[in-house]
Amino acid sequence: MTAYESRAIICVHVYERTRPVLFAFVEDGELMCFCGAVHPDTADSYRVAGFNHLVEHDPTLASLPQLAEGRQAERIAVGEPWMEGPLDD
Image 1 (cartoon, one colour):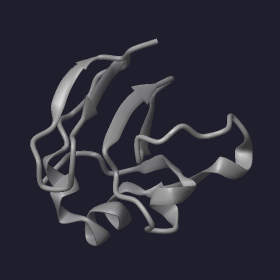
Image 2: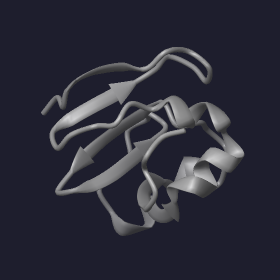
Image 3: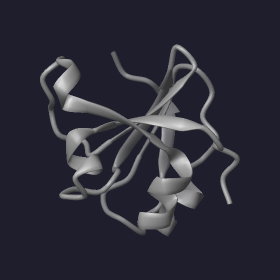
């Protein structure tokens, strides 16, 4: 199980469960979990949720690597391995 025990900022698609988490990163100490689509940079495009609630809905998120500041992980589909690297600009 992952050690992420706090909140995550998620895109509205993940919040509404219309798309899975395929892209995650840490920025300013916050875990971000998005579907990988492009979103407008507006507050109504994002929500805050407990990471444990995300794992309850998608247990494969438990395999998300522990990311340091400025690192990202992405996968091509639910159940596929995470690929980790530096956060792209």
